[in-house]
Length: 75
Image 1 (cartoon, rainbow, N blue to C red):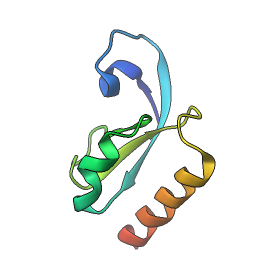
Image 2: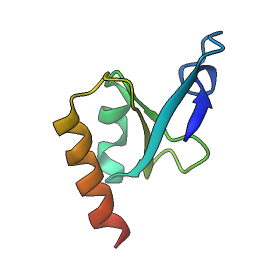
Image 3: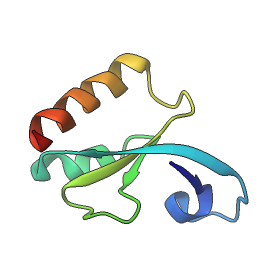
Image 4: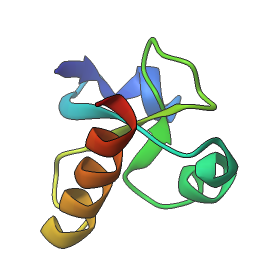
């Protein structure tokens, strides 16, 4: 989805960014929220979901691993 950067990063940027919401293990939430490009999920439970910015902040392999984990939790 496309969201304003300010809703995730809390800055004043008017830029629109592409993000993907992914389900995570609750015990990993705090650790993942400290990684650049990963935020508490936009309009979702912050303990179970993250928003991943699709702007090359994360390597493709990292994003694919997060997608795989999310898929396993939502089957």
